[in-house]
Length: 79
Length: 175
Image (cartoon, rainbow over all chains, first blue to last red):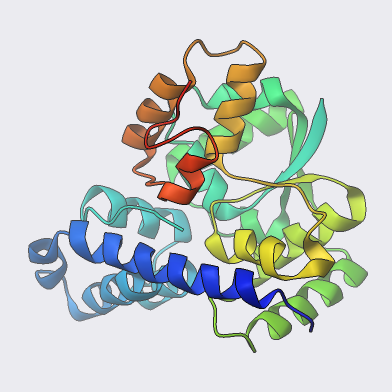
């Protein structure tokens, strides 16, 4: 696949910045207090932004996982 | 008015917005792939979807074999790159957007990135919530883009990057 390399580099940086935002605002006390399945799923979500796989890890519906991440774990949705 | 197709990431955020009905001031019909419908289970999302389906402003788009095949190829291609890949539901939306000329509504960075780096999809119109709010402001359905963006971000807990905000004039949207 031919790709625009400059745009690709820009998005790699954008995703790195988004990870920093999620790390900074996350309620780590809440995350660490969760049972292993949910804790690992939330940590994975903070690191990757991959809400779909994280929801599967936590054995939750996608929207229920994302809402829990926003409202209880204080992880903002970004990029 | 145009038609659109929405993925899960857009719907999960948009249903949290207290003025979510305004979406249908911008689009005639918003389609949802079956794969997206299968991912939502919260009462808030399901009520919003069922009301939209009843009124005919939302519609479920079935799995179509040739679109599914292209979407799966797109997922595989994106996984070879050192950037967040596109998942199947977003890939399906991007292929439909390209083939049927629908606006793709997504908050998934993987899909927004694809439009930027892959020339094959550069012609697809990809909108985030912030773009819908801007269209609503331009058409006079909201009074202040800046205030509405602030409300939207508070209610949805969506944080837009400085690059997204810069498109509309700065840190909190200029207008």
